Image (cartoon, rainbow, N blue to C red; front, side, top):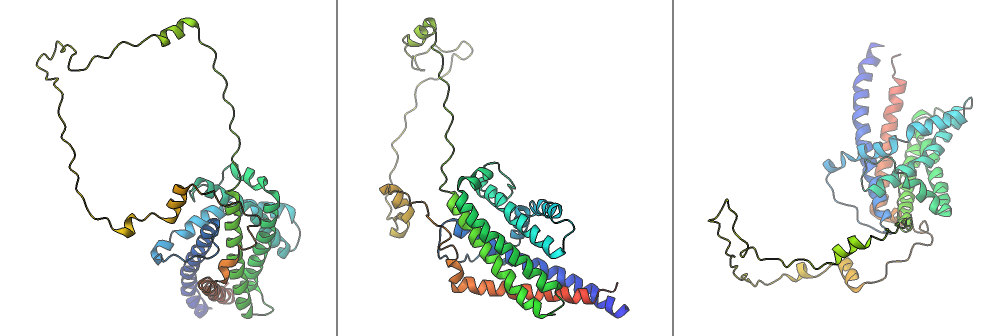
Length: 320
């Protein structure tokens, strides 16, 4: 008992540290995929940010998603009361998959990750019902796959530590699929036209006396140097100052700096904007075919396997 507790405490601290590292990598991959696919990119270069710039990303993601975890648990508990725990987990995953896009759309519209909910997000979801249904089919399937993989990786007793391997692959795949689908949903929502503005009420016609005052010719303005000096400052010098011409210094411009960008040239030529996507989910998962994206998915799967293995060891060595 004492030897088990002696190993359990350091292992618990090590598992807590590695858990945050896994969350840092997972949040970086998720937010990067969402941002790039929300811009309509089929292929993109992963940013070369330093690891220290990733440390705050789990806080952003937990803030956006954590606001909807409790409502999802309450809804699943109310619907699946008295059922098996597996069905309760599936209902929680479905409820979270339904509610989380509202938080993501709110942060996307406000250009701030700290905006958990915006009323316009509901209108955007219902603006394109067929598109939203397609996303929910993909998103709910990914959430069920990810939660099922997490349960298989940490708590399955039938297949033992082999569940950590299978569950890690399922969690990583579901994580990347959901990120691509969510980014494409945000990309399609940018083409939703804004609500029509309310017409302003016509102002009442003013009476003739007020209009005659407005139409009267204004008095000619007297230059300041011709105005009488104030009594309290008779020595004030009101003569205007003369400004010299600006000196022009000619320098050779660097061609690479002067050359306008492609986006600037499109604005100058007034090209028509790209048409709205007919089926944004047709190529939503193209980034996952890139070698760097696949490498990141494999790395995340390995990290989930190691973390789930540590959780299994903690469960087996629990001194209680």
